[in-house]
Length: 500
RNA sequence: GGUCUCGUGGCCGAGUGGCUAGGCAGAGCUCUGCAAAAGCUCGUACAGCGGUUCGAAUCCGCUCGAGACCUCCA
Image (cartoon, rainbow, N blue to C red; front, side, top):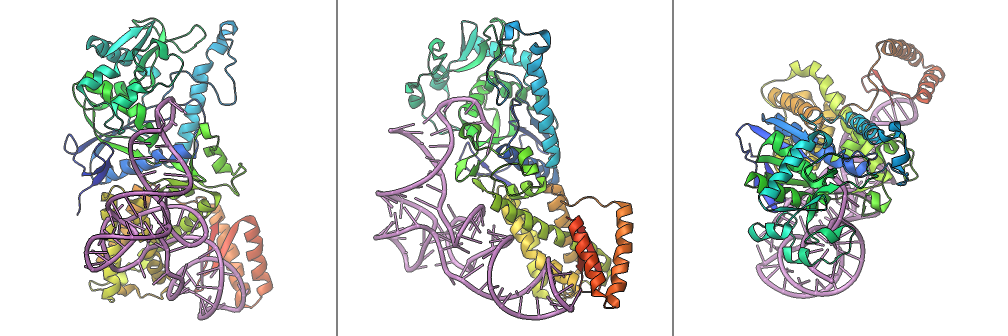
């Protein structure tokens, strides 16, 4: 079998994956800022890296997956202006930031559950690691790479750049960064505009504040990831993931901080997913073009023609390679919905074929077909090893679907395949679809009583059809369709049903 | 303005030098009481222009177009 290769943003090429500690993988993924609702764009990294996590586990690695919750810093609830006349508000009102954070954290967890994303091994919060962050900042000051100014602390990028390569991840030149003359508030107290905040002094009305050696304030954005990744994954760990838009300044700054504190580069493989676009433009709050996950699941958005099941969205994301942009439209999602349905039905047919697997022999009845199936299935691993190409794996599955359906309809003799080929086909479909891709059935789970009722109805319909009483049989089928249950008359005379 | 990326058939989307993915939509057919599903067949795309090469969607150059980052951002 080929070895796993991943695209490393640091080297801009695919590299063979070799963990720092054999058999173990440390993976850190930038989690959500819980100041608002997650949208479709946020779903991509969490699905992408969930699949990577599952795949690494499948390969036998013991993976520690850390994904933070950014719950510190200055933010406001969506749709509400900074009207906080904080000083006059009641104690209850002063607790509000944490309530807000809790609300969106819960919502985020709920969405992840919908997506069938496995919870990370550790999900640290920024507010829970203020001490670690302060300690790290102290170290940076002690080493001469940070300076305090009016209760805030900044990282000295210029100094760092004299000894290290600031910009190597994002491909930026330090000269350009230093001469950037953009006027932004708070720039005045920095030595250099390129410097970034490690600690910010809290203005009087700011609720989220902690005591520090430099006065009351709150941590800068980049330091939390450095502090928490170091704490739980060590000074050097294997994979750091996140969206491409975080490469600069967030990840670049993380590297700088950690490099000073830990005396070495923190991350071996930087992996970045590309953006989800809408009409070719990045989906993002600042573009005012986001579709929230709750809207996606309910269909309640002008751009949506219908509601979409979380599994459809997961499948949609998996149908492209994670480093390409993925253009959203209701139409594209509908295509995914139909595709997933067809693929899943083929998969269910494949599982049911187990009953007939005793008919199989050691020899393939159709050598050519047997070879084709073997090739298509073997390529699953190869494609995944080539920088997690889920799109190609799915394409192969679609190519296998007609074979599977043919076996089921008996237009393809089951003896065409050797027993080993069939069992491999079956097990690899299950492993990939369920264990690695994390997909599951879109239809409702069977209810025992409903199953019994359906058995009865199907029986009655069968009798009617045998008597050529098509008025009755069509009535049953049409009425059920109205309820949302579809009947299919199979080729062998059986009738199958599905809850839409 | 700087840095970078991309431009594939009606839509989405793989693919980085030869073997012309895949999904959805569309057309025809088979099966079927009908329907649905399924199966089979079909469409020969790679922004434009030039170059390298026996051979390019794939490499190089230019032109046009789109986008990302440089500020919070998955």
